[in-house]
Every structure is written in C-alpha cells, then in structure tokens.
Image (cartoon, rainbow, N blue to C red; front, side, top):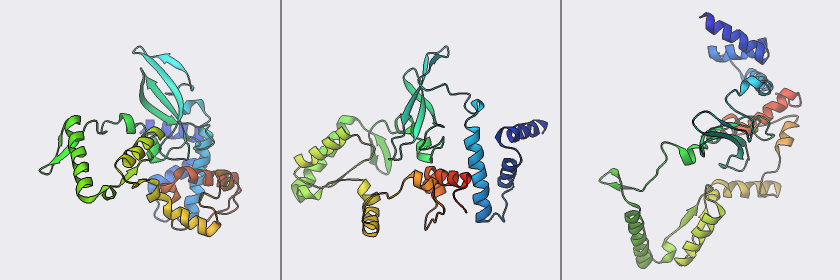
Length: 268
C-alpha cells in the first residue's frame, strides 16, 4: 500500500499536482454524476497534463532518438521515423527495428498532427505485417471448417471459378474492389487484370466510405472534401458535434479540439 501511495505522489508532482490528481481520482471512482461540462473540463486538464508530461525525458525511457543505432547484445536496434499508413491523417510514428524487424513503436510527441497520440488503428499498425494473427497462407472452407491449402491449389481453383463465371454469365458478372492498404502498383495491376477479363467493374473501397460524404458536403458547401483544418479547430471559439463521438471515432482530431480548450480559445 505504501508503494502505491508513493507512486501516486510522484505522479502528482510530475504532471501538475492537485488538478490532475482530482481527474485521476474521479475516473478511478467512476463518478455517476459526471456531466458533460465536468467531463470536458477534466478531459482538457488531462490532455494539458499529457502534453506537458510529453516534454519530460522520463516519459519515453525505452525509446532512443530518431535515427539512433545501438546494440543490446543481441543485434542492431534502430529507431526509424515513419508515418502511419492506415488513413490520410498522417500521424507520425517512431518504429523500433531490431535486426531488420519492426518490433514495437510509439507515437511521435513532437508531431504537429498527432501530438503524441494514436487511435486504436494506429496503435495496431505494426500488426498489419507482423501480427501473430496475420493470415500467412491460403485457407479454404471445407465442411464448415477452414483448412490450409497450397498456393497452387488456391490460385488454380480461383482461376477456374472465375473462368466459369465469365463463360456462363459474361465478363460484367464480376466486380472487384481495391483496398486503401494496396500501393499504386498493386492498384494498377488490379485494374489491368479486370480490363484483361473484359470488364470495367473495378472500384475502390473508399467509394463505400466517402461517396455519400462527398455528395453531402459538395451539395452543402460546394466542395466535396474536408472544408477545414486542425489549425481552424485549434482556433475555434465554439464547436458543435452532431451525431458524432469524436473521442472514439477520431481521437486525434478530438485531441486538437481539447488542446484549443486548454489554450483558452474554446469555451465548453
């Protein structure tokens, strides 16, 4: 118990004292009467304390400076600055590469975009290529159970099925949707393949995400894309969220809004 108490006191001293401690205590006690105004006020305090604490050298003891190279007795360890590829926000990442393998990463605290924060997708970005649950070989559903098959078997069965569909129903009976996780060359080859099969039925998954938003924004504002920037948010006098939970849906943008509140330009 004494250890916990000492740790709590150290935390209060390092992150701003009584106000941050009260926020921590409120969250820990799960206050049932926490209204929106109190939530925003305490969230702003927490964000401000986090931004201040991010400047302390003690916050990132396991991370070396960007570009640093060291050895831990087992091989070379490097820290490489990169950008999250999951969406177009452009959050900065410091990736730790051990012997050529990306082993872990942290958000970049001095990034003007993500300010040392990650959304859930950015926090798991390494798992796209190195996750333990990533599928590494073809699987086929046989009698209700997925069974591993060889690449040759999978490609042959898929090709034969596509030829059968094209022969019986025509080339326009097939449709393919590209992925935002594919690079330009992969997108080019996918489009080329569909043209080779005799159809123009090729689109991108962003059509599902943004065809409606583009139409709505274009009809409302005359411009079918985002109409403001993080700079606008940080200098806003007021903010109105309708049908949106930015804290969950877009925590990085919410961080900028809370930073505006902390700076005093935004009144809750």
